[in-house]
View: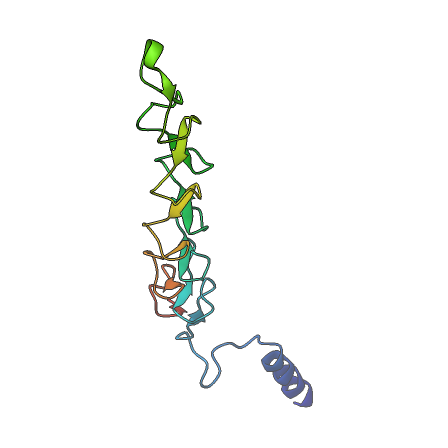
Length: 145
């Protein structure tokens, strides 16, 4: 009798009897994808809630398309030649002082303009809510069935 009781206790301790008492087949497992929270980090913004702008790549400014990248564009009066008039009457352009270029008014001769597609280089992530999205493995419950 003592040997059987000792074996029975060892079997219970090592988990050989799984249907003992309160423990039954209704044990639910925690979701491995979200660790039971029901939501996980967004794959698009990596949990930040914002992602870099596709137009300025997170800089907040993009290149001005009205001029070259140095902030100057061809003079509207002489067409970039630096000379106004033709033949004998040709003189140095008074608008650009003969340089053929004038300051860009769109970007104030900086070469870059503020990006109109974002806020300081970032946009709110459209795929999640504050960096987290619903777990698709457990359907947001946190438990596996």
